[in-house]
Image 1: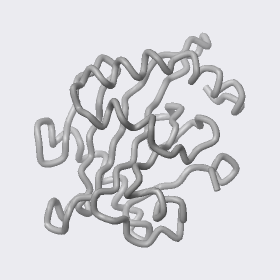
Image 2: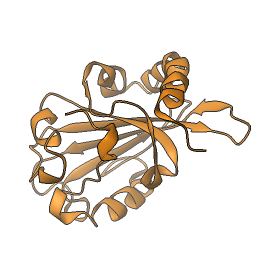
Image 3: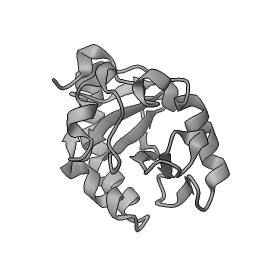
Image 4: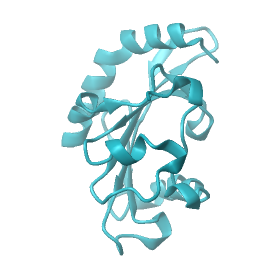
Length: 166
């Protein structure tokens, strides 16, 4: 279900405490830290590449400068971490917490097939569905197989221009 930016923001604000608690219960430090990072979307938006879920984009301090260049990103520096928290709006209008999607740029040689990105997905109940080169790695193939189509932007898709933070 598509929402106007104000509606999406209101839903996000209502779910924020639940998202924060769910992701933090994974035990991964990044899941409890990402909300302190710079947000690159002014409102949640429906992401076709994330199953139509509404997402917000965040980047850690290592990633901020490069990520903020959007399509002119070049190569992201090692140590860059990008986070997309998410929620789903049901056909009845009820919104629920979705997964937290993480991408971390690793050193060359980490995983050629993933463009040296480590993908992690944390489910709404706090379980870690998978981590590239780790437990549940096979679950993460769909992430990098899609992202690798974006060679010119270091495997990154970008949010709609009208919702970007400048």
